[in-house]
Length: 127
Image 1 (cartoon, rainbow, N blue to C red):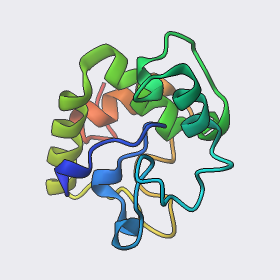
Image 2 (tube, rainbow, N blue to C red):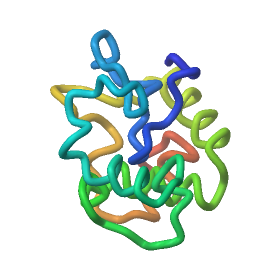
Image 3 (cartoon, rainbow, N blue to C red):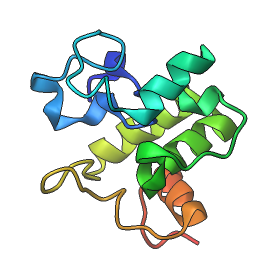
């Protein structure tokens, strides 16, 4: 985990992304997706740093996927530092952010609350 890379505007965990060998990040001005990324553009238009700062319950762009949507919700409830702490602990325990391609252990969920519990515990079997 490269903690200083933190969380992207949309909620994805840049700190765990295996693509970071060539990714410049949302705010670099060099992001290859900057022109079409709905979440980056919306947050810039609203003058906010991240989607989790917004008061709307939004599912546009990448927030239509459970992982970034839930990461945003987690930060709204518990803060970005707690999310980073949980992601770091989970990585040390063997939880994989990207297993094949862009999908990993955080992607197979259908229920937001179950994913939040998994983020907190790193345990798929937690109550």
